[in-house]
Image (tube, rainbow over all chains, first blue to last red; front, side, top):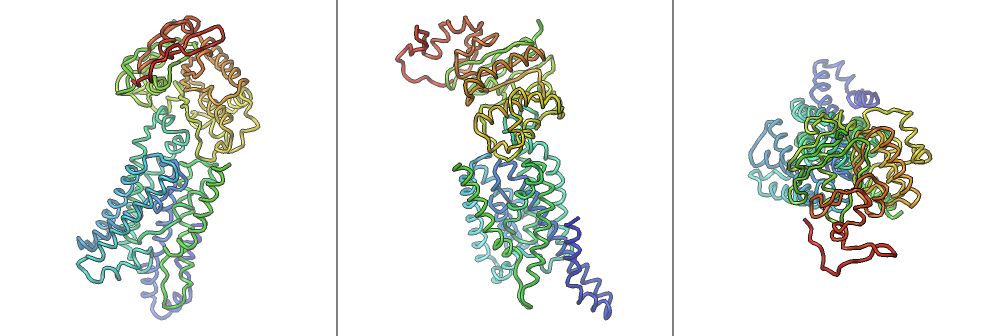
Length: 312
Length: 243
């Protein structure tokens, strides 16, 4: 409900120009609403939901509250895949780009499993995730520097920093339809992921093979994150914070936290995108920058809290 | 008496040789063996966690074809790890994996394991010994036909070691189920109906507890022997090789 109200707010505010335009040119007003504002609202709410859902699923799967699309390096992998598709294979079709993004995210998660194992301790997971994010970031920069188009760097800046500005409805559909299907399939794994809280062996003894569940979670998360990143770029911390808040609502159960995490993620990203609209006229702040600025202290607070718990 | 558990040729590549095991209903079976002998591998294979060959049936139902919803009625497995990552309330953790939350039975279990005062606390903030009792309660909660427990007495104080054995005995008697329990302390086998000695990935001896404690197989496997003042090292051989 809160997400719907915020999404409506996001769609119609600022109301002034919309009313004014409606008086002078109703057709243009309706075009502004459906072609410009609607994709932005859908992407903000949808991408936020994807980050919340996949963050919760990855955390449950890796048995680690710090696993998330950005910390595991999958967002960076998705960006690398999308840059490769856009600037080296000259792919313009948003759905094909989404597939490249999903491929990049999938490879990053695969690298994480190879480097850190399927249920590693926090330090190993963080180090492996940081290494993958750095490697993917460097590879992305290299691909942009050597891209056939000399404007690739400039072009991609606003896109890769995470933004919903000037996206079209077909782009929103290319991101959100595959991501929505992947998230719906992820939601079906809530019970298996809850049982994995008892340990992989217990889940296996109850008929939920952890390896199969893990492959599903990683593949579906890669598809969802990859599709969104290929359209909006990488957005940090929502996938880390939303599941943390959601588990407070589900009594700590990691699997059943997925749907609440999706709702919280959607709310957070719609709020963040409303906030960046407050930027001075003529300036655009990519929403990904805001989530990182707000998310970093929260991340540090989580790490410090974890360290204190371990010490006690 | 009919067998509750029938395992035929269960094996794990490199760790457990093809093993047959029958366990009758209503029996408490101790599983002992030196470190790395294959106790955990045998329990994991019996729980169908990992198996490279063989077949496990409980009350005639082949585990390979039993759907997840039916599994907790047939068996539960308690791993040796006491780790709990997520801040799930102890009570919620206990009913997690149970097919239904039968409040009365769960309350009785909490009472028997004296867990009422811990029920609302996050399980990841309990002491290791408290978590051990919570996780044992989780394994017992669905009232399965077979309990497969990997070192349930580790991390428990002397009172809880004795109380847990007593509780297992009561459960087996009341429900007509069975339990296969791996033990660290070989003297505890005397509280069980039957003792299995695992050595180098196979069952090396299957004896009554008293016979097991005096057996040459046990002395050979553990490299200890019973003296007048308890167990003592029997042989100065080098380190044992794993199976």
